[in-house]
Image 1 (cartoon, rainbow, N blue to C red):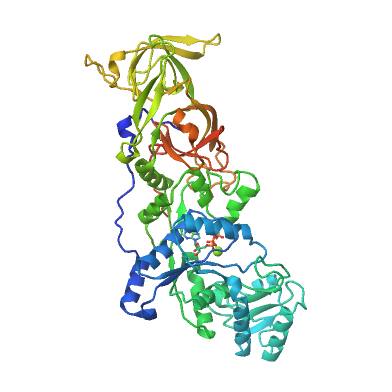
Image 2: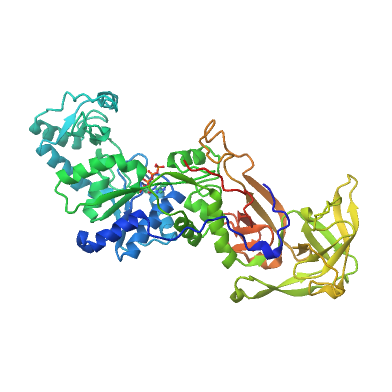
Length: 576
Ligand code: ATP
Ligand code: MG
């Protein structure tokens, strides 16, 4: 990880690379505004966030949550949280609970409108029967592989299933027997009868129901047949009165099928689907299947590993909901896929923490300084401003004494001309305190520097020399006798490449240096009382957050949320 070169304290408020994207109306908000103006849906606006509870939420889901919830708020509408839980095998209550926690944390409020697609299983079953009765669905005996083979290709039409013209009464009876549990898994399916030559493959007699003798996290063993996602999603929106069914671009091809269901079923309401480009972020992956693989195979410590783009990972890393919302506003909503640079997310968290995080001093790689002319046993309590950006944050006392810790990096024996930190015979300012001069370098028998012997100038309490001599460098420090120890975890990108799927795939592109845990870091004593989740700026070292899992009284652990500046530099052109 590169370290910022002499970030002066004045520069600690970060510059931004982010372009000032106007917060104008995106195309989806424009559609909603037009619908409201035209009085469509009786002027109602109703959106939802429909996760499948088969993993933890990530920053991409946050985009969808902020879009759906934001629209409901802006147009005086309603917002539902609905779990699309049609697959009994991959879904778990653990995921349901984490998703609710994350949606709430992100600031979206579904009030009393928490729903589950599984609550609609009876209705969906009745609607499947309705299609059979109208000659629009049939029980099919083809295996999964055969169904695929019969479907044809984009250039060739499909072939009809031998069961396509099964008499209605027979399909009805067989569907009832499927439900009654008379057949093993995979023996039969229920399929819609649409068009085996349709140019859109989704319309070639899609599967509606499968036999699966599996317990469901909510319906238990009530069902042994389960509707497919495609036969559930749009109808669930119809049942809930969703006016604008907002989803990501890959569902564009499903829209004709969803519309077909709506047109052919006795639904109480007709939702309309609109697609937007999903969020892709450089140096990270978002597929739940791949995130699960990283967790299961131990490449990360869990779903909340601070290197992951999961909401719980970002929270543990120290991200705030405000920063994530600001990030989402910046990137906007588009109709074409692109990859957003990770540095934009970092810009958002720096921008927020710069305003709210108190500044404190912490030495990550300590080197001892002894002030030979400072009275033995004397301690001065220095009054330090907590946050120059926020006068209401007040001040605190920081002890200063004869023996101090500074960063190893802040001293160089053979320093180049432009090195403004400490060098033999050189002078620097200690933040909030005095000017000091390095008089002697103490080494051990291996030639390693173990201590600096310095003098301080008692007349420089203001931080400036009385005689007008200029001192450029300002260092942070911690009094040895008063320091509290901590483990500090520094993070780099989880992947080596901006597009982790490139080359030999995302596992091969894992960055072996993505976590560096520093033990024996020295923190100013005010941090002894840090509580899990507390966010601070360690002067010159970045923004940090007390770890929510491992930090406790007597064992402090901090995660670096972000460096003070964009050390990964340029915004690469990744769109495509
Ligand atoms: P995966 O494909 O990895 O399983 P998913 O998109 O299927 O993820 P869902 O639980 O179905 O996960 O997603 C819930 C909602 O979040 C959907 O409406 C989906 O469109 C949206 N969403 C998922 N990923 C993103 C993303 N990267 N950007 C924007 N919206 C997303
Ligand atoms: Mg999905």
